[in-house]
Amino acid sequence: MMTIRPTTAQDWRTLKHLRLAALLDAPQAFGLRHETAVYHSDAVWRERAAGTADLAYFVGLIGDDAAAMAGAWISPERDFKLISMWTKPEYRGTGVAASLVEAVKARAVDMGHTRVVLSVAAENIRAVALYRRQGFSFLPEWEPLASNPTVSLQTMLWQTAPG
Image: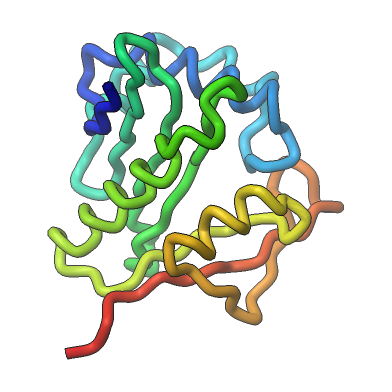
């Protein structure tokens, strides 16, 4: 059975475990480096797991196993962003990632946003395919990956249907 839900402060160990695993598995996909994140205090992980009005994390559970995570962040420019998306390798292709993206889009709509943006390396074919299936399309906007400026990220956009 699959469950998608926002994290709470009590989920800090789960969030920490998933995030550190993601940073080891796919360092080219994230602006934060494992070498930095591993030194975050337990209090920082608790705060992130608890969320704020502008930041929330979601966990995808398959049975009792934390299989995937995604974040939602409202940038200073008020863009609603999908961040920190990652699925354990053994759960890729199960639908848990798609369900997390749906949860982030639903949160955006619930908060009155009509758009969700994300940044992805165009070479990350599997992630791009997932986002396209979820209704995202590329914008002509590029930025360097903070943790590795040789990697270029392109912005993708999802928006609610007009009307």
